[in-house]
Image 1 (cartoon, rainbow, N blue to C red):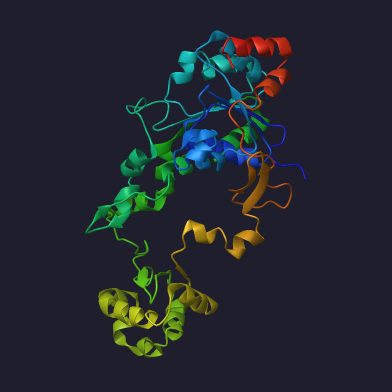
Image 2: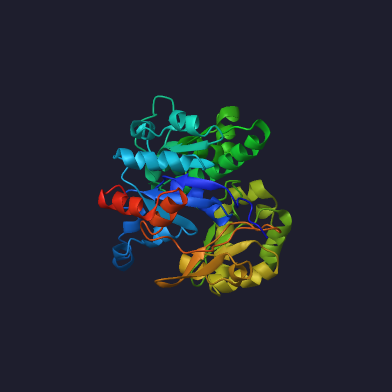
Length: 397
C-alpha cells in the first residue's frame, strides 16, 4: 500500500534531535526527506558514544532518527548554495528547520522569502521559545527546557532534589508536536490551497504535555513537588518496591487490583485489615503496607513477580533496561524494531510508534552518509553533470 505521505517532499535543515525526530516521523510514512547539511554534517553524526561509528559520520543516535532520508551538503554562506535551495523550494511541500529565530532570514531563505517562490509551501520553524516573545533569541537545549518547563520540578525525590529524565524528553516532545502540527497544516492546505508558517516552541510543547499538572495549579493553587516513583494519583501502591532481586514497579490503582495484589502476594489477610480498608487509610499507613508488600516480594526476583502478578491481572513491571526491552517478544510481534541492510552491515532501528491498516510507516533505506545523495538530488533539480562537478569544485556542495 502507498504510505500516507508518499509524494510529499521536505527540505530538512534540522539537526540535533528536536528537528530530525519530527522529520523522521514523515520519513517513515513515505515523505521524500532531503536532509540539507553543512559540509561537516549534522553534529549528531559525530557522537562520541562510539568512535568507530563517529569516524564514519554515523553516530548511533544520528542513525536512530535519520533513516529513509537523503543527504545533500550545501555551504549556505555561499550565494550559489542559496540559489540551489530556492530551486528546490519550487517543488517542495515543506521546509523544516530548527535554528534560532532569524538565522534562515540572514541566509535569505526565511519564510517570507520562500513563500514568494512557492505559495503552497509549509514552513516549519522549531525553536526553544518560538518566533516571538522576550525569550525569542535565547539558546535552548533539552536540559534547559526540562528545568524551565516544570518537568524537573515533578521528577526526582524530595530529599535529593529534582532530576532530569534519562533521555532528551523535551526534544522528542517538540519533534512529535511539530509532526502533528505539520500534518494539520498539510490537511488545512487541502482546504485553503496555500501554505503557512508553523511555529513550534519547545517550551510550549512541553507545557502542553503537562496540561493536567498546569490545571491543578491554575485551578486549585496546588504546588507540586517531587514524589520519586509514586504515581501522580498519590495512590501508595503506584510506586517502586524492593524484591528479592531487583525492584518492582506497581501500578495498582483500583480496588480490584489491590485485592489481586494482596492475594497474589499470599496476604489475603490484609483485605480485612482496617488500616488498609480504603485509599486514604492506605496512604496514612503507607510504611506498614510497604513493609508487608516488600516482605512478600523478598521471596523472589522482580522479573518473576512480574510474570506471576501480571498473570493475575495486577499491573506491574520489573525495571527493564533498554538492552532488555529490545528483546521483548511483544516488540518483535509488532515489528517495532526493524532491520535494514546498509554498507556497514545490518542495522536494527526503531520504526513508527503506531500501526495503520493501509500503508503504515516503515524503514526502507538506511541512514544516509554525509552528502551521499548530493549528485542525485541536484540532478533531479535540473543540474547536469558538469554543473554538479563545478559546484563541488567551488565548495558549494
